[in-house]
Image (cartoon, rainbow, N blue to C red; front, top):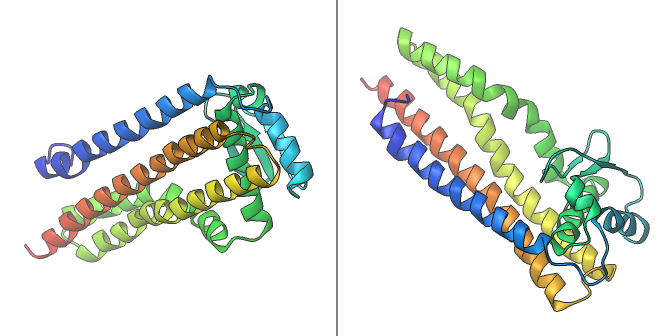
Length: 230
């Protein structure tokens, strides 16, 4: 696969370009808005406390995680984990990121069907690609198309997961903006402008992941079904 010119042109190069753009965008947005204080001078941890108290999202744990940009919501333990910088800095970026995670909390507490579907797809996304590639290659080697197709279906799990993830993340950002507006956390035009910029940049990382997974899936589909016609 790695020496196939089609793979390089169809998957590797586009993925490198798309991922590079996404990484540069989120890095630039985060760097810019993490150095600009939000109007209320609240840290990410304080944002979380305000949203738990005033946003009706109290039934959730709050922890500080390790590493930069490691912020996430764990629906299994019902816990929001904020990275050290987000938790402790009163920046516009901290405001947006903390609110985004509570957008996920709201999705979970309101039983969002898309979020539930994404949680169900996690095992398929984690296990499917590894077993899928093995079955596809084995099927191609022994000339058993059915085995390769089964592998392709398993491999498609990660593409389906990223496809479902994108609307979940976009909805969490939409909810975050509404939560910040309703609780008065967006206290200036600059706050709203910066929050939207950070959330847009973060959303594009999920667009990049989806495009990459679809390109990889399309490549393998061409290989599997192309070999079946030989």
